[in-house]
Length: 218
Image 1 (cartoon, rainbow, N blue to C red):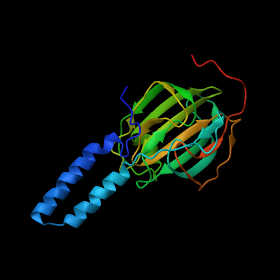
Image 2 (image 1 turned 120 degrees about the vertical axis):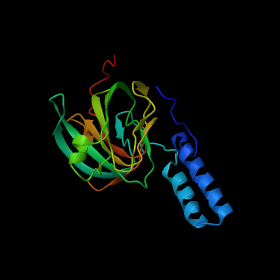
Image 3 (image 1 turned 180 degrees about the vertical axis):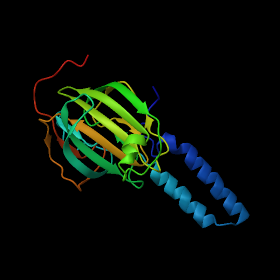
Image 4 (image 1 turned 90 degrees about the horizontal axis):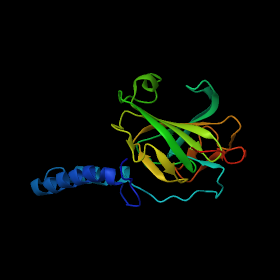
């Protein structure tokens, strides 16, 4: 398990890129060549890996928060690989939105699968079959849920700070520069967002679990 990014202003996974951009900017000043271009690149790199603090919009342990910044792309019933039907909420994350992924609820990551693949635009359905992907099987206090993370053309990598174990609601667990995130929720969940809505990771409420009493998380 990796040590996770915590409260740094810039996610530590971006420090090496920020350092490289800074060195190139200093060299451009020394050589007096296109320094303004490299200054813009330096600022953009810091913006790309920004790590803002987030507070959930509602303090309800049955609330399901957005795991990613982005725009709601689809909300539909979908059959998962276990043969059961779930509500799939798909969030499209652009390059300009904050890259930190956060737990949608207090939960336990039971297992994580990775599929190494191509870095394709998630606009194309082929990217779901051939693209870089991470699949998290999780269990909350109320229900089982799944998180599928699909890397986009500019992502280059899906960073996961934790691949198994407990997470608190809104806790940082990974980093995705660009791509989309699919959240599979039980059919009896109440979804309160609509296609086209903009959401913030760890802040925006996507919906609520149906109350069934706590379940065994072992």
